[in-house]
Image (cartoon, rainbow, N blue to C red; front, side, top):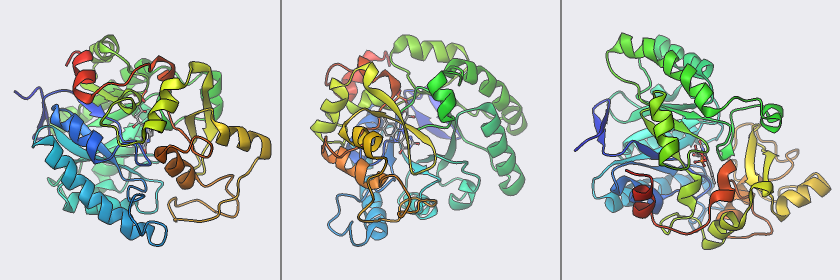
Length: 351
Ligand SMILES: Cc1cc2nc3c(=O)[nH]c(=O)nc-3n(C[C@H](O)[C@H](O)[C@H](O)COP(=O)(O)O)c2cc1C
């Protein structure tokens, strides 16, 4: 039985597994989550890193891999749940990746790391659900107004990423360090109010999924009581057998304690959250690790100036290179203490 219908598409459990780049959420994790009736999400960020020609021809390798990952995720899910992609606005291949995913039959496109103002242009109406990731009611309003004005389209659902999330964060570094961003529940209350006039205007629900530090059934119930339809979770999915990262990545997070979590500068131009590993130590000591190769991944990146190459650092991490990798994590990583499986985790969450 469907628990939630989102603009005509049904899911059995109101859970999105958050997209995790590079390579942490690909076909196996996304397929397993969808197989349980939720929304499994493939990160498009350099998702072709395992292809033989990735170093020589990253753009082609990424698009080829993306098609295949969507196909395999759908196969693994046996038609249950939905398969989404997470595409970051800040990436060079943003538009191409979204178009390729839609042609490959992806069910939903979730987009953040910048304002996805032109997302409707790349996703023909009715082909896939479109959803922005926001960190405030203000960002939602800017996107919704712009989509309405330019495309007569509306978000099919929205992901609210609070300050405890992993990866890139939509808050100022200073606010994150000082703890003045407001909690995900505070922001959620405002977002739920901001969404209402749009729901009334279009006569359908725009479900809100809260993300960032959501850990257990009690957290899920708390945000649902405040008006969220469901949650997006990422860090807990890293310690699953199905997660596409190496066991060394999973172990790095399993072994990390709360005081090893750092806010870092990303060449994307946003702060990020990662585990304190030798790479971060080196950057603190030397200031810069000059890139040796460029895969043209980020729109605003200037390899001659960036402190380090984030693509290389994330790829080394997903492969399990503890010394040179950048290990993105959510703030609650200290609570991660055992490996599990996707169905087991979903059962534990009370779904
Ligand atoms: C390893 C890792 C990589 C991530 N990569 C991305 C990404 O590529 N794009 C994105 O929009 N969010 C990314 N995120 C954020 C997650 O999708 C998710 O919204 C957030 O981490 C939820 O908080 P939680 O980890 O506490 O559950 C990443 C998070 C982690 C932990």
